[in-house]
Amino acid sequence: MPPDQRLDRDSGRGLAHELVERLKERILAGEIEPGQKLPTESSLVEEFGVSRTVVREAISRLQAAGLVETFQGRGSFVLALPASTAFAVEPSQIRTHRDVLDMIDFRIGVESESAGLAAERRTDLQLKAIERALVDLGRSGEQPSSAVEADFQFHLKIALASGNRFYSDLLASFGPMVIMLPRTRLEHAYTVSNATHLTRVTLEHENIYRAIADRDAAAARAAMRLHLSNSRARLQAP
Image 1 (cartoon, helix red, strand yellow):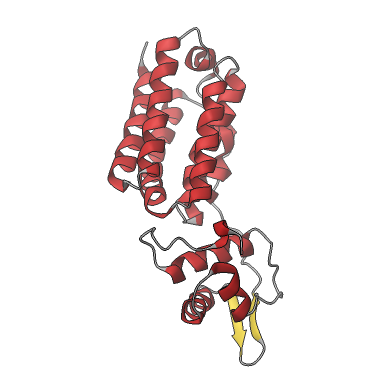
Image 2 (cartoon, rainbow, N blue to C red):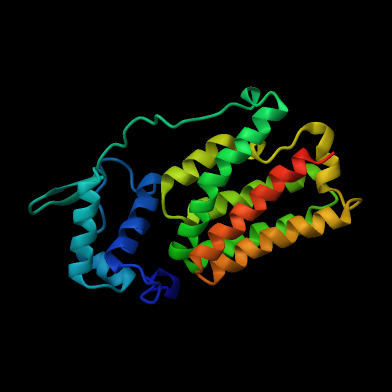
């Protein structure tokens, strides 16, 4: 069994809960399609290094969530996912400076909690993904359009690490436009010509990352709230 397949017994999360999240990721990503049978109990025990009791509890939770159906003597099969009714905001709906400020207010509430959950629930692989996005953001100072994408990926990876698909689904529905500043301010915000600004924004992202790496949920929430609040203040600066 590859070492990274074993569930994290030191993460403070229940093994059954973590196994549920791993299997949900596969189902939602289409790796196990509707109608397909889940791996056998023995296979899951071997793959993830857990007991049969943990596997049975995870399957029971997936069944309760409406993701699988279990048939006596036949196993558990993935059910068809319900049609998406995801909330989405089109870029054309963000028309005014007031709209931009309102979007940041909305993000403060959503992403602060997302960061806190990410600190509690993230896996080592998810932390590496956040770190890569942070590195990409640090390298993109001379290319404003690349910086927007890197900034968005940083926030999206945190939402994914929250373990709650509604956070990541919502942020993904916004796309990079959620990071976009008014066009007249984009160059000012992300070019090396404004070294003080770039250093400050980079430090804010690093503080979020460190809190998540340390599994400090309170610090992660506070760091995300401070970053987005500062972003709002920067948008109001002359």
